[in-house]
Image (cartoon, rainbow, N blue to C red):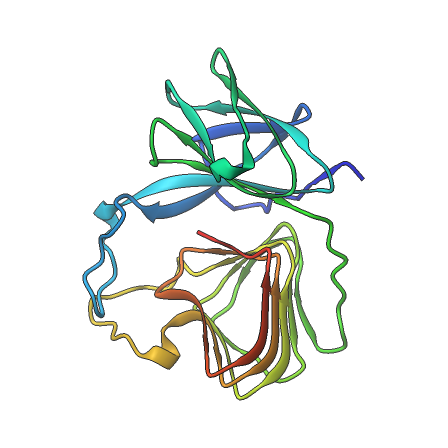
Length: 244
């Protein structure tokens, strides 16, 4: 295997901030609303206002080896940096194109600073297995409300799936998995200034008094409060989880 471009769901907005291709094949960019300034939310009990946010973008694909990316930003720039800088990835700029060679991992391409960056998520191959009690979300857009998980259950968000949810929770449960290379999105939850922070009820994905939890591969976008919380839990594994 060299690389795999995931399907892009119909109806999902495509970011116009960047055009990205891998080995000459174009990859659509997802949108992501992010904070425009580092610290901006009054505490407790108030969400940031939209005028304190901006749009960023991300791409996601699978590869077991390094791949060559060609990236064309929609805006002019003078400097390009890839983080983490410990990865020692040096962008090569040719006209209005940025060329990178990156292997499996998570990276951030920043042009002239930290604003409107491009997140690059390259997943290693993962042979996800469904068990008998699997809630499967295939490629496409899915709308759910509050999802309460029980012992032994697997949530499989496949590559190319975007699941719009309010919350995902488990109480006093064990042997739960949330796996796959798709996206869990919480942006459609209507925040209000009256929302009150309650420790056990305010994470977008929350595990309360649970045991043996495995979360692998998923992207979590635009959480309402904390993205993923575990309170009074034991034996938890997070692997290749991306949070925007």
